[in-house]
Length: 124
Image 1 (tube, one colour):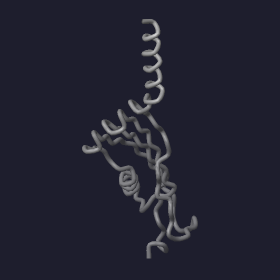
Image 2 (cartoon, one colour):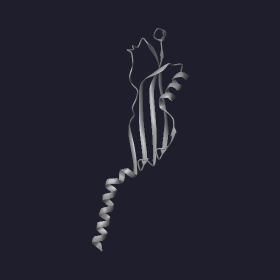
Image 3 (cartoon, rainbow, N blue to C red):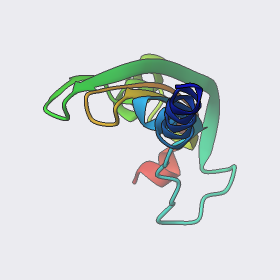
Image 4 (cartoon, helix red, strand yellow):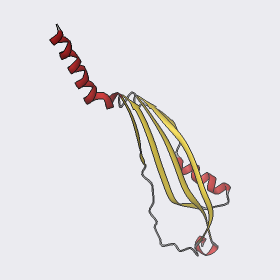
């Protein structure tokens, strides 16, 4: 009887060690960012307006229902409100939480960039 009890405890612990991260996970990592420039810019080509930051989240259930926003468009919106034209040095960080990998996923993201306004010679 005692041998059977220890065997069950061993199996339970083994399953917990191998499948514990499949039940609930939390991950924090830098996200992918579009940081490619098609042309060479110098500091004479633009004026720095300052940093812009935003954060948000999106949630998915069973990989079918997804709610949330995008960070890049929100940064551009804030840049336009400051009178700017574009953003540079775009950074994106995500924190992901999930239950059973596909049942529920929640991603909280933080995005930041530098708002710039192009000078007249670059707009032509």
